[in-house]
Structures are given as C-alpha cells and as structure tokens.
Amino acid sequence: MEAALDGRVAGVDEVGRGPWAGPVTACAVVLDPARVPSGLNDSKKLTAARRDALADRILEVADVSLGWASVEEIDAMNIRQATFLAMTRALAGLAHAPTHALIDGNAIPPGLTCPATGVVKGDGRSVSIAAASIVAKVRRDALMKDLAVMHPGYGWETNMGYGTTKHAAGLHDLGVTQHHRRSFAPIHKILCG
Image 1 (cartoon, helix red, strand yellow):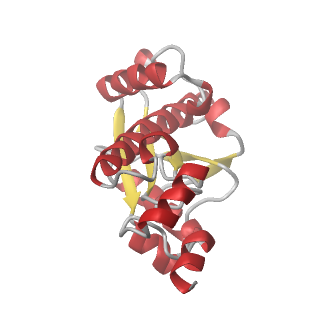
Image 2 (image 1 turned 180 degrees about the horizontal axis):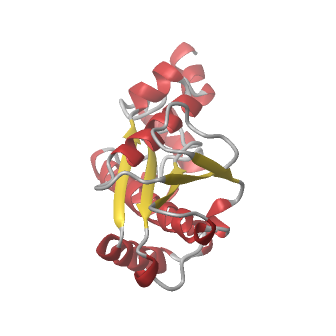
C-alpha cells in the first residue's frame, strides 16, 4: 500500500478505545523501505512475545511516535475525539513530518498537517499501520500492567482495562479509581448508583 505513495508515509493506528480504564494510545510509524521488519501483521494476530520482539525491532529501524489521550480527555470530549487527538499527537511527534498518513479505519482526524487516507482493516493491509498497531499495543499494555501493580484487584495486568468479569468484580469490591473512564456507561452507572 505504501509503495503507491511517494515520500514519507506514516502508518497510524490506535489501541484502547473500548476499555473502561486507562488512556487511549495511538502510534505513528514511518518505515525505512530498506529495513522493514519481517512478520509485521495486525497486532491482534501475534503472540505477546512476537509483538514485543517486533516492537523492539520497529523502534530500532523506524521513525516512531506515540500519542496519548488521557482518561480526563476521553471523559471531556468523548472517545472518538480523544482517539483523533491521540493520533494527531502521534503524527506531530515524528522526527520528520510525513508527506502522507495512512490511518487505520474509515475516519480521519480533522486538521492533520498532511494528506491522509483511511484504510479499513489497515493493520492487515499496510505494513506501516501494522507496525503502528504493534507498538501502540505493546506500550499501552505495559502501562496497564504498571497501573495494575498500583491498583490490584481489577485484573488490568491481563484485561488491560477492558470490561471483563474480574474488572467488574473489582469495581464492585474496590470502587472506581482515577484511571476509570467516568463517561463510560458501566462506570457512570456505579458513580450515579
């Protein structure tokens, strides 16, 4: 997909739209065509060990930038707008501005400083988007594991903040933390219950 475009093409993907807790994380990656790591694929189709190894390799050979939108930003603007914000931040953080961005999905953040194309199921169709999906997932998972140490009982080390039975039980037993998205219905219901 990148081969059809001239210049510095950035792949952009996000992780963490659906969880009840934690930030949404986006990543932008510009690959060097001569040093594309082998085995790039949708992060969800890779084992954790393979994702970790690929993320390390991507960081060695590519221009990579992460963008985050906090729980407070998610609650203030909604998850869609917060995801766009994280993507915009990821693109802005690249060492050199891209000439084109390939965005996973069919929605493009407003106000980008370069042309962009939405690519449905892009993490399986573009190596740059696949690379971005891998780094975003590895970095957000690591953050949620760190938060799980500070806030045990919600299962974030394995559910990454998603709405699992263990997470729901933790909310029932321990209550809502500052890392929970208060605008999301299950958390809102507890707070207003």
